Image (cartoon, one colour):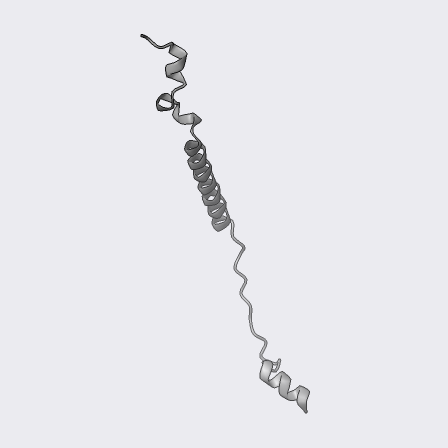
Length: 73
């Protein structure tokens, strides 16, 4: 009337949580989120330096409309 010990270990109700597919899927997503968070934090901390650009006053300002008008003349 008693069942062997190996039969109770292999039953689906007694499967170890680490052997289920959902554990590994959730673990993979957690690791992916942690990796992206780390990369973004490093990128924000070590961003490029701000460079101030100054506009030259002696150069004529041209936009697309003036370039097309000059080309049509």
